[in-house]
Length: 246
Image (cartoon, rainbow, N blue to C red; front, side):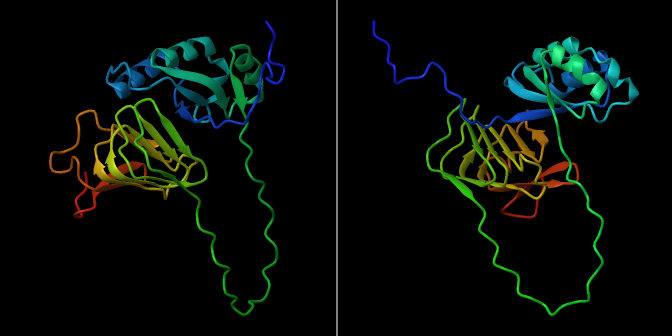
């Protein structure tokens, strides 16, 4: 059989991978197990095999004694696939790599010394701000689909079904029933918001802070227009028909 010579055996292309952050404040496996059990309420599909980046910045000096295979197995039990570790000191890196994880290097911007303040100049009109990028989806988002608007707002004019996941670095606007999961400010924008013509979501998140609705929304709010915003470390769901808060 002749092989198709025009088709390469393997292709490497740039792809966007969205991962959740598992931020550790304790290294005790029993404490972590209890916290995950409480978080998920024992729901087997609370997480849907998402990729997870483990952040160890919040751990104390004992973080150098982490049992990585045990932690990976624990996250896997709750359907979180650990792929990398963030904020790890250099002495941990060999053990992390040996456990099959990558090192996620976060490079902070260097702060330059302040320059001398010049005399005030005459006011100059600011240049017009470029319009933010927007991704527009006109078809229903089905269960199992994941849509990510990178560096953009996301506008959806059709239904987002249960089991679907929509993600945007900016804000999310759904002019139809919003079911499934909606994650705005995915790159850390705490000012991002989610707007829904009919609020029926399973989970919402702003800049990594999330809120689930296992028990559903109050009857007077379910299926009503709503906006979701971040207030400190709390997710607020506000009715667009009134000033009421869920």
